[in-house]
Length: 597
Image 1 (tube, rainbow, N blue to C red):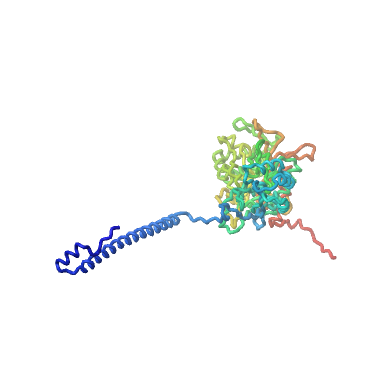
Image 2 (spheres, rainbow, N blue to C red; image 1 turned 120 degrees about the vertical axis):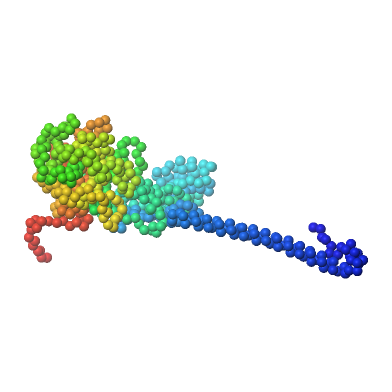
């Protein structure tokens, strides 16, 4: 920087010649220099202030834009995360309708290894194989001595005894990580409802637990939502009723040599599923692997009550008669000629064991389970109106139940709904639905004709759907179902449970062959019931896959000999648990005498 002198010699000489004071030159130059420095500093300060103002403007602009984005987005609860990870480790409990635990969490530990920190990997492998018999010492040794390995998981869940045994090995390369595992304290009870859970993403400090099947997977996000603040998920299931249902169903399946069994108990007013069972079942604490060969229902993972689609036979007859009553085509005492022969499009409609019921009332068509009588009634209705009725009942779509397996249970219906289709469907053939579909249809009759939507979640109040039947039609249908049980010629006389007035309908359908036609010695036996019939509260469906009763002189496979006795025993066991005390006619009460000590 060149410095300009304040007293230039030329100016001093010139000032002296002119008689001026040279000091005035210095003062003037000093003033000009100060003004120049002041202007330069002012410009620099103004520039800095401008830059600072721009920075504040940008910062406030970013904050404002972010606030605008947040205000326009949907509200979302932030998820709690473990330190240093993005793994959500918490999961809500699942309880029954009375608050009893069905699924909960338990603290445990996982075992992992740092092979490069191990002192004696061969000894560690041998000791681990002794503690965990399913592991092989040689395979562990190869993994522990692999120079490329820096980390490996050994076991995901340890019991306290196993953890102590591993700790006693004294190997610094074997380490433990905290975990929360899913625990099902009731074992296999309600296993198809709960489904099961497994570890998802894992870290050393935590692991997420995700649903594998059932309601655990269907409501996975809700169960993992921290916004629940520990509140459990309440199901409609009653643990006591569920346990009794499974016990009776298992005993009946084994006694009747059935390949499988299913049962659904539903509240007719709310659609709540109080108990639902499928056998064989499994323990969700040790969920088996899905099968890779064979039929789907060979696996205990297969849910016969929801996934299973079956021709449920004569249980459909009451639906046909109820529609005809609703349309005013018949009344309970209308006489129907069921004498042979009767053909539809060249197809002969026969009766069980070639019976001829003659001319009988509509009530007896149901009580004695006449195929020809039902076929003639449905021809009065017409195939178009029958198809619409079943569509309104939900027989064309999968049930909207809160388990992932339900979405695949879409009923099998004819591609062309002909008169012959209408006839066979009127008595439960030519259409395949799940036992859950049938339970919902019977619940509609039991509640006065309103459609119900099955649910596994506890409901505080009834949910009334569209009304398909008038009250008088529903009452007439109930009387017919009651006569099936108490009538002299009824097909379900074994279903009578003293004090509970059971009404229902049997259904025995031959199983279709893969190559076409039907098996003569393999059936699906079903009993669909409502109780108590004077004021129905529950619908019950019991289904047995290939049952055979062998106490008589020849094998018996019909529902009256198989599914009906199982359902009767089930009602006798569960009705008191449901808060239904038995009611007896006064004439049945005998004189009581007191006894002294």
